[in-house]
Image (cartoon, rainbow, N blue to C red):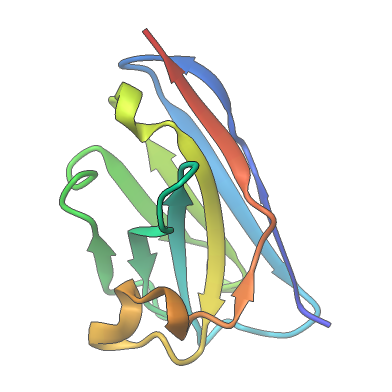
Length: 126
């Protein structure tokens, strides 16, 4: 049974920073793309960032490029999302996902990810 667990969310003022962590257990997914998505009430889940299994390739949504950084550890089963320069519109539930099928152009597609965490709330205040 695969488990994906996010942590690190919280309340932060605009302009501040947070670091989200995502740990995958129960199965070695070190060769899977790992991605971060976010969702606000009434809206679809949207892509934020993803990283290839090797860590050599990353993808970012335009809205976060230059402010957020995705990384993963050497073993490949833990991913991180560093959030800097947070804006009010970054407020959302952030989800981590692992996707053996989310390679290349598919890394930004929700449906390509097979394993999802429960989400962690990020709230940015003014």
